Length: 156
Image (cartoon, rainbow, N blue to C red; front, top):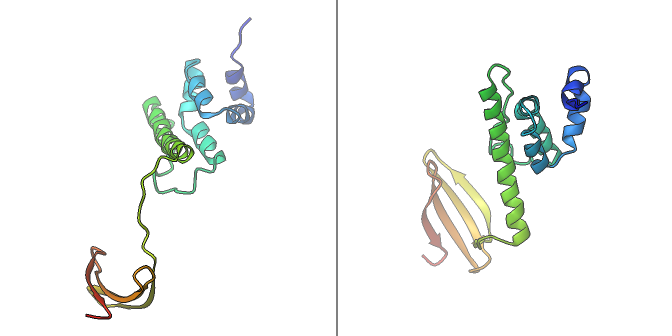
């Protein structure tokens, strides 16, 4: 006699269902969705994926994607919610894979210290000391675009 344990737990003990599903890794959670319609509907509503990502401490950059809200009206809405969580998971998986494989691009970091700042309606003026070049600079920035428009060193 076969019984669907998850669905019977969901009826009377939903917190146990959540605890069981929270033990799964991302691949197992995705595979569990394929077992039957009830499992798919329960997992795809987004709660399982949200809890999985929160347990992985993936909330450090919350503005990448807005936290999806569960919609109980239409199954396609619930599936769309799961897709949002999968985007977040895939983004962090790519970050982790790149970190593990040292796959990155080099970027020059400018080391300078701003020791004076002045702002008016359209410009920002900074006085900086560039440690690499060992010189003082005065920079004029556009307030709207935040681009540096002019640089003067101490000899100009």
